[in-house]
Length: 126
Image (cartoon, rainbow, N blue to C red; front, top):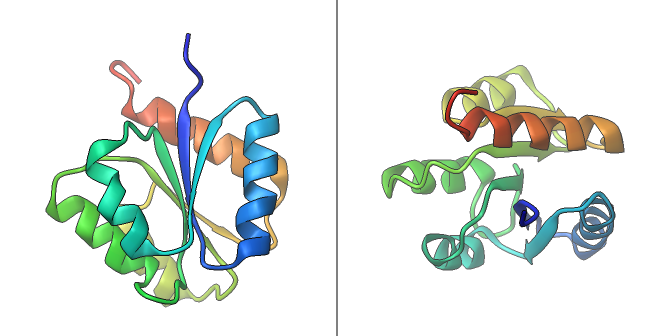
């Protein structure tokens, strides 16, 4: 069975690198994107099982990316990460379609659990 494919979208190189190492060592195939625009350009042509999405990107906000995914009917579960936790950000992310909303710095196990839950939510009979 093929491992799930996780797309990491974060504009900070050190965060992308750390998330890549964590997720790859946990058995996922990982694709990394430095911008929301870059991810959205590739999203329709790659079979991503879950997106780990920074809420504050340089070119798009994570909310913009969530809205763009739903606009083109790409129903990919999304785990939002943010270093700027506010009740407004949380509410907007979850009502815009995020499966989970986690704050940085994130505990490794919490992130893995959120990704696995997001992938299972997409599976038939989940």
